[in-house]
Amino acid sequence: YLFWTEWGQTPCIGKAHLDGSEKVVLVSLGIAWPNGISIDYEENKLYWCDARTDKIERIDLESGGNREIVLSGSNVDMFSVAVFGAYIYWSDR
Image (cartoon, rainbow, N blue to C red; front, side):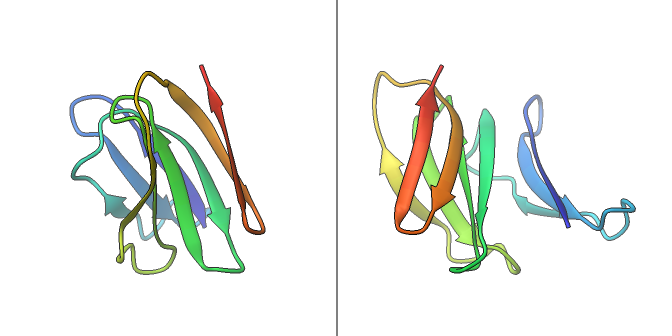
């Protein structure tokens, strides 16, 4: 799969096969500036950070369900996120 984030009029997080087929929007509500995404294959989760809402969130990788806020801050401009084992790393623009 190819995963992406999109800003603009209709921000979203989506996935598709590498040939572009079977495009699916996983998240389209409650996001504004989704930046970095990271996949945790061990836990089967997709993480993203949002520079507008100042949150790191995650969903189930396959279904897009079970959305959870992992971290919520203020006065940060989250730009990228990485997950490795039990650790989450993020950068502030």
